Image 1: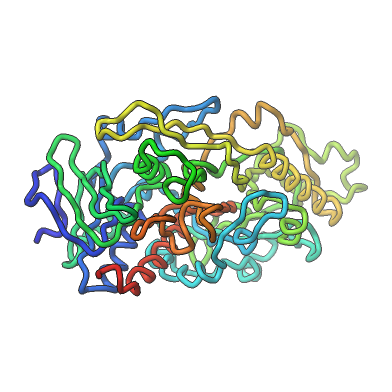
Image 2 (image 1 turned 30 degrees about the vertical axis):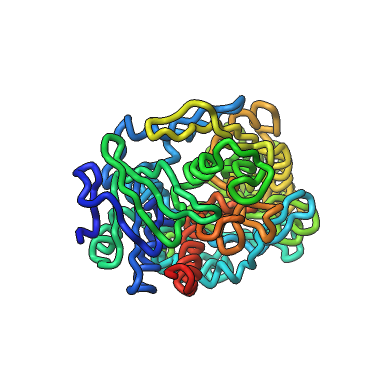
Amino acid sequence: MTVIQDLEQGLTTQSLTADVCIIGAGPAGISLALELARARPDWHIVLTEAGGPQNASQTERDIYKVSLGDKSYGVLDVSRRRKLGGTTAHWGGWSKPLDDTDFEDNNAWDVPAWPITKQEVSSHIPRALKWTEIDSGDFHVNSIRKTHNGKLLPLRKDGAINEQLFRFSPPTRFGDKYYDELKAQDNLTCLLHANCYELVRDGDKVTSAKVRPLNGNTLEVNSQTFTLAMGGMETTRLLMNLRGDKSADGEGIYSDHLGRYFADHFGVRPGEILAPEGLKYSRFGDQSGPIMPVLTFAARDIRNNGEHNSCMMLQASAAPESLLAGYGGTKAAGFYASQYWHYSTQMIIEPRPNPTSTLTLTDERCALGLRRMKLDWQPHEDDFASAYRLFNALGDELGQTGLGRLNLSRPNSNSIRENVSGACHHLGTTRMAADSRDGVVDSNLKVFGQQNLYVASSSVFPRYGYSNPTLTIVALSVRLAQHLANKSEVAA
C-alpha cells in the first residue's frame, strides 16, 4: 500500500477501512496520527488532508471564504493554510504552556474554565516539546535571572506584576518535518487533496467520511473512530453542517454553544515607559535557546480581582520627548539619563469568552456543497479595560519602587477597540466542558451525544490565556492518542 496518496492523481480504491480516521493534517492531526500509529501497530490509521504538500491554489482557498459581521478581521485570509502541516507553515514558533490561572474559573465571568487540571495537560508537554523541537522544558523566569543579571526588573514579591517565560520552536513546519515519518509508518495512510465534505452517521455514531479532490471522485473512509483536526474554524463549520437544519437545542452538534465564543488573541500598545537600561522583555538568545520574558498580572490579582491573564512585552525605542523632562531636574527626581531607556509596550490580551462572538452558517455553499460561514468577531469590552489596568499596574510598580515612570499615550477608546486585529488563533467555538450544558466536547475531546467523534483543535479551549495555542494543541493531541489507544472499543 502506498502510504501517502494524492487523490488528485486518481483513486486506487473507492473505500478504505480504518480503526481511526483523522481529518486534517496540521500539528494536531499529524502528531495524533503518528502517536496513535506507533502506540497501536495493530491498528490502521487514516489521516486525510484537504491540501497537498504545496500552498493551496486560489480555487482551493475559495473553500475558506467567510463573510464578516460589523467588525473587520484582518487576518482572516492568512490565518488558515490548506496544506500538509496546516498553519505551522506560517507559525512563528512562540511556545509556552498555559498558566495555572488559565485552568481556573474567573470569578468575574459567567462560563466555566477547563474541566481538566493543568497537570492533565502539562504531563504531555514534554512530548509536545519534542514534536515542536524545543530543547528546554524550563519555563521559569527565575532560572534565567542569574545568567541575565540586570536584564529583568527587581519586582516586589507582593506587587501586582509578575513575570512568565516564552520559548520558541525553530519553528517546526510539520508538513516538511514529518513527511518522511508519515510515509514510513506502514500502518498509516495519509490522503492528500482529500476534502471532507460529508460525515455519514447511523444514529449517534459516525460510520464513514466522504472525501474527494475538488475535481474528482469520492473515496469513502469507513472507521471505528473519527477525529476532526481541521483547525478551529473548519472543524466548527463541519460540525455545524453535520447538524443540518435541526435546531441548537440539544447537546454536542446540536448544542447552542457550537459556534459561540469565537476568540483570538490580539494586542494593544497603550503607551511608553521609562525604566532601567537594557531590560529584556522581548525575544533574545539564551544558552538554552531563544527566550522571551513577559510581564503579567500576579496570579493573586487574576484570582481575586477577576483580571484577564494578559501579558506585556517591552521594546527599547526613541521617544519624541523624553519622559525625564517631565520631572524637571532629573537628579532631584532620582533619575540619570544614561541609566534609563524608553520602552514601547506591546500587549497580548486574553479574550474573555463572549457568547455573542460567533461563527454561523449562511445559505451560500462552497464547491464541496458545504454551507459557508459568517464570522461576527466581538471582543468583550472587559478585554480592553483589564489590559489597561495591567499597564497602569506596571506604572504603579515602577513608581513605587523608583524604577521608572509610565506615559499613557494611547488611551482606551472606540478607535483602539475597533481597529485591533487577531493573531490567527481560532479559539473557543467547540468548547470543552464537564457537562454538555456548558460545552460541545467532553474532557476527553469527544463530542457530546456522539459515540465516536472527537475534536483536536484550539476551538476546544474554554479559557484562552495569552499563550500561543500550538504547544497546548499538540499536548492535547498526545493526550487524545493515549486515550484512544487505551480504548478497546475503538477497534471493536
